[in-house]
Length: 627
Image (cartoon, rainbow, N blue to C red; front, top):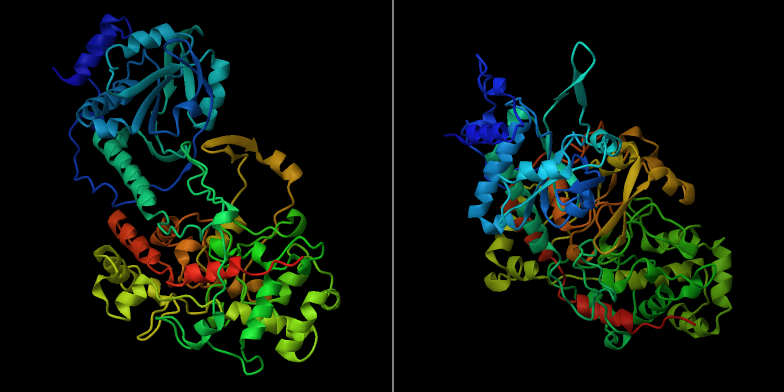
């Protein structure tokens, strides 16, 4: 006897199915889910399951009449959610969903490792008949201790309707010619695949609902999660990392990771030596003839960089956006925040190896460090100073700077000397001699793993990364110092604000907040057209500067707006070909990388952390911080 016949007989003897459904003269053609899969299924992890939308919460009842929320049953495991009603007699309707779940149930009993990571939810949309007791009877032939399969209902149709609306489940009652409800419904069968971030990743209709494809998609999400775990930054330079490390803060099992100030002791470094003798893998540091470098200028620039007195209200320094132990960027915020909590629309770029940059700022609006430093000093939402003269006069009034300016420039502070001092310090933050450099340039074969070598082959070949992140014969800047439209800026400009947004309030705890409530208390988000704002050329819309990939494992989150949290997110973004738009860079195309190749490529990127990072961060800890 087939499993579907068994299900029908169970429903028949429970009084849930009219006899006519079993003995119809012309039985309907069975959906694919009842038969062996008619095609060869692709390898799990060899394809992507893009996020469709957020799953929706709602109040439900368990078979024990306990009130629960759907979100309580999501997040810790991957979830498969189906909507049914227990008296459905359409063989290709609710019985199909239950039969496919039953097949998955049997598979999971043989694969306990997979069973621990998946939850099945069957929710009735007929609460009038499908009470908790009725759903308990319905579930009795399917549940077991080895598989997490929950059967749910709601207290009323009124409570159910918002859930159906959000999941776009159109359910219509069928009435007879006298206007009496027949106990049947018209609906379109859908089953939802929901990841541990409570995001819908696939929706299955009758034609695509099959146990094999669902299991394969679940394994694909698990493989994606394992990539995330494996490729999470492995750099562990205690105490040379964020004092309060919030990595994995979105997970319920997050544990506080803090480093005491006593462990963060500095050690002054010879920064000039990194300019005179560059680390392995980099070319000579370009030094402008108008600002020859020396140790005195570097020391003065370092003091200015960490001095909060350079801001309007004496609370904010350059180092508060370019945090040394966070890759001289900021790991904790997608976009920067200036004095008084004023929002900045872009992410804080790292200043490691900024000496080699020919364009500065994400939109490339400056071309020398000496000029660039005045941008944040004068920006209203960064350091907030009203004018150049205000900054100059303020530093002139500080007794502890006079001698240093005289030693460095034989004159006092002015627009030129302040800019040159700050530029000299930033120019000294040269970092290379990574594991990759020792393997590729020093020919030390054991310096990297086979995985990293495969990742570099992908970087140069199938991944086409080196077209923008260049690698030369004798050195590698990992940037072409050009501007490109990847689609990130276009997506942010064009996306519609959802009615609700997911807000994290504690580790692993998220709530949905109506966007209008956020808008009521938030500063309006300014638009961002990238390079176009500088050139006014429509072809430059959403173009941003190619960042160097050196020390990339230290500088999350990524992209000009900090919208991608991990290196895996970045690779997966490019793997999909960016975001299509009118001016998308022609170099951005789908890469067709499988999960293992993504893993290898991210491992390579993690091998680009410079060998002198600890020394540069320790030197920053030793810097004076002003009064």
